[in-house]
Image 1 (cartoon, rainbow, N blue to C red):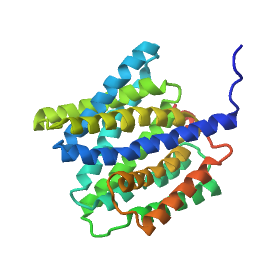
Image 2: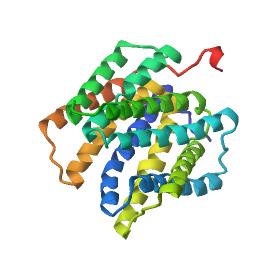
Image 3: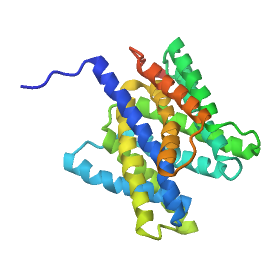
Length: 304
């Protein structure tokens, strides 16, 4: 006797929880990267290992479960999401750190919920509700307080930070529109191998600098397992039901996770501004997660 299908409200709650778990996974990467960098790993080498090992971890499960691979337009979109989205966003983000502080670049990256909200309203037909506007203001206010805004940045750094936010916004919108019918694990596999290919080509020109000890490899493996495979699969799975705007707003919990883990594992100071900012971000997550009927992303017939 088969079990009854979950109610729409329960299915939505589960999808929101998946997005939140993915934010925890993504938020852990900055901490693990600190250990990897201390072991001599270069940024490009770390990103290549992250995506390549993630793909190797996904493949056995995909073949064992005999999951269907994406085809046609969905396959091309996923390849673009990996090679242009993930790889491009990371390149802009880490390059921007040479011209602006980490706090400024991080804050610019997490402008992506605002960009997703505007683009999904103008292009994809999502409803612009008062609840979403309030959640957006809470999230952006919390990010400003948590990370801190530093204006002493070079214009190129600001442009690269904004570019990382724009690329990630397009990544979310493309995923919500074209990959909802694909299996999350095979979708994640295509994305990570596409990104690994880009960084592999780059390292073939510049040279590879991997971990020097077991501790460095464990940090890299943690990034691949928890910060990539689990986080990406959970995000793609939840995104199919929550829609782009709600998923991006819930994802603003990621910097809060990073700050808390840095406090617990690295002994970094947790100030009142970070506590207040984190509370505002969590309030935004709770507010948007209680949205009863989030609009599903749709395009007009001209874009089909």
